[in-house]
Image (cartoon, rainbow, N blue to C red; front, side, top):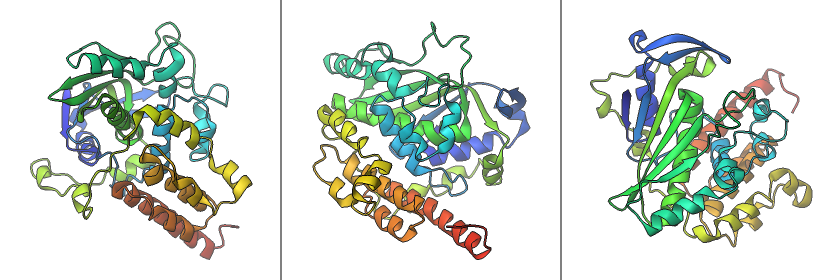
Length: 357
């Protein structure tokens, strides 16, 4: 077992790149999705500060809007594709019916097994903080094993336990792409789940461990962008973490009223941007900034949704204005970097006559 001990996702990504920089650590392995480099042994990533969940390494260029909204989509227990394809159209490629995801984690957390596992685990750990039986299940051996489908759960189960008044979480994963999965989507989704569960129980956020049985990278353009980042493992700990460059950064708690989170989630997913534009016009987002129970919505989610709506209209100025209303500095920074890069690309294409917008 290879263990990568990281402060946050930015640390983890650099350690992962370093792992795959030497052929003694991996093998070339074919898969149904193409050629991979696969670590020779399972890899466990340990995050000491999981709430520092935003990848701020520009070469990675992850879509912060999609990762954050998808996390809320999971907490809402949804499996419908529409809220996701607004941000990433290719999500439909992972669907068997073109409308939903069979392996949707939130759906499996909250209703697939005919029970809300999150509520049960919260109540278990409230009643007995020393309980070691708080297991969140995502894998269904009766239906997933040997199933011929496009979306079989990669994360299979999660363990929660309270130690020193902090909620520790261990996520088990059968197949983990380092760039798109482990240090892309998973770290955001699962750390937000951990923060919600800790808030609901009434304890602090502890350590997050991700155990990846097949830890790999696909040989694709994303890997080409990041593999050239040079890392000296002997001086690595002296490198400046991107979070330390955020002036006056302080984590803003996402959940303060977990009893009413479902109310907030239902409201949020009723204001899908396409419908908002039809009903009210795309320039009336301030109305949706009020009367929320949990700060995650007015502080981050609603301005994110508005900013992305403007971005899709190629109204970059309005998109930036909305991004600046995001109170969480890490998410604000990531959104600014992501939209700026696309604005530059759009301007260059316009100059070359390559776009019709």
